[in-house]
Image: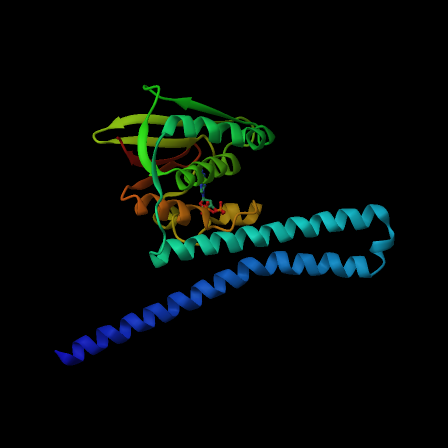
Length: 244
Ligand code: ADP
């Protein structure tokens, strides 16, 4: 009996150690690209580029972009850390989900246009009052819409945000008509750093942390999020929010 318990403990420790190794490996891998890019720009500037006003501006701009990417990764990691350590405080307030969605749609409009995407809102009700952490739910909507834009159809991407009545909850769906996610990837899509090969190769600048953060936020509200997707047709993320 004692032996069995000890063995289980050791297995658990091993699992945690390998989890930790994988996490650290992922973090350094993500940070490496922007760091080496910045180093490359600096070396080119030192190598004479600094005297050419066109080149030095171009390279400094690129370096700035890489620094911003590093900041985004570190901020995502901090957010994940807070969410996973349980020290996260959900600051609830009563607000209208539809109003917030409209606000986020406006915020994302420029990016959507750049990617030939249109964002529509479909709702049977005019307002949807909920009691939740507004700033974090805004983050959820931004991440889901941002993904729908990035991974949607390149020619004419139709993004729809739909509201449904679902018992004590509202069901909110964000769908796109992009290339979708193959079924074998779906179970892992909310894991930290997880990306499909497709998005890795296209280098959309994501770190693979967005959906992990989204899931944490929804679960911290004791609500659920799920995904369904049809390759070639599109993807839909749906989450619930309690009515007040
Ligand atoms: P990233 O920063 O790479 O966008 P996310 O955690 O937000 O990270 O998403 C993880 C991965 O899930 C993405 O890299 C992409 O492969 C896939 N994905 C997310 N949303 C969509 C979508 N709407 N359509 C297709 N694939 C998606």
